[in-house]
Image 1: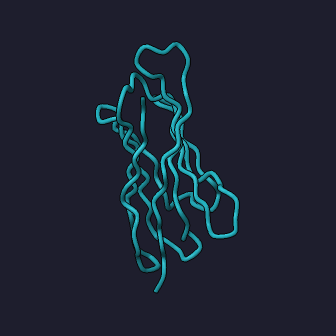
Image 2: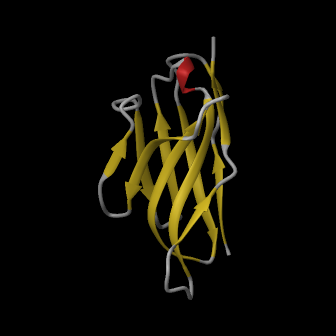
Length: 121
């Protein structure tokens, strides 16, 4: 069984920074792909950034140049560094990962429970 645990959310002033973490725990064999999504009140969940393990990254246009996704796969953890935060970045941020479990032949998609980010003066 694999679980994703997000952390690092909080309240910050415009222009500030936060670093979100997504840690995969349990029977993790290989993390294949990880993405961060944001869901603002009354809006649908939207892709913010994604990383293919050992491969490319991609970003939503709204965060390019401000957010950076990276992975420390020795720790089974993926990070989202968020700089120059804006009030419109306020949302719950969810981690999604495609993981091959120990003893499984097929990868599985997992979701974390989310972490709140509030950008306000």
